[in-house]
View (cartoon, rainbow, N blue to C red):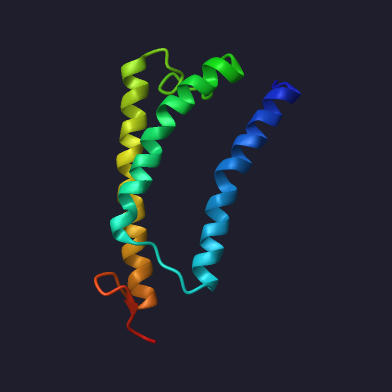
Length: 119
């Protein structure tokens, strides 16, 4: 049985991780906006910056690993956890690049000229 504090922690994590995703999807559906494939590197960079934030946030703020529930992410095996986070950075790059490609195609956007073909 989970405590109220643990439930609140899960609720906070779920909200923090899903709200930006939902807002972005809504914006992409209703606004003439695209992701740039060349900006995918920033997605990967942000994920890499998150690694020390995750480690020190758990150590100094929560007083336990942020993702203590998973032996892959709880820093009990630092090289495994680091590998997972670095892998996630690569995956974020790929997901952002594919998403940008699809959105640009749907919106009729040419990244080379930075113009919409259907204007």
